[in-house]
Length: 124
Image (cartoon, rainbow, N blue to C red; front, side):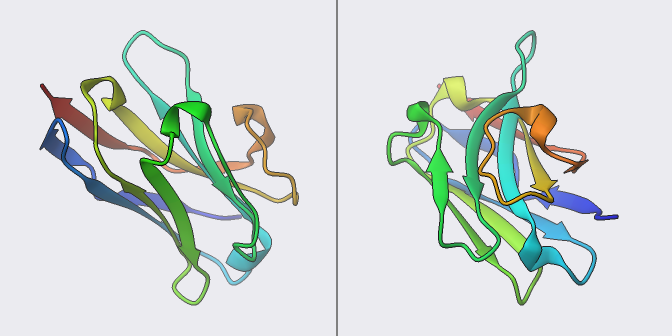
């Protein structure tokens, strides 16, 4: 069992930046693929980025376009999402998720554990 807790969300103006963190419980954090997803009101949850257990493989959604960076610190059981040049359309609840497989999945149903989410609001 893995418990995840996101932090770092908030209100920011367009063009600003935020760094989201996701702290995980357990001693096997480095064996999990970690992903970030987001869900805007009235929309389906969508994939943002994923990182392998070692951090050696990373995959981003096309809309990230170099603005977001996913990273992890296995010594701290934490995964991060650095977001730059934020746009109003980035407004959503951001979730981190853990997957026991080694696949860098884009589908939410591939992930086994989820955090409660953190709100990101970008004003224009």
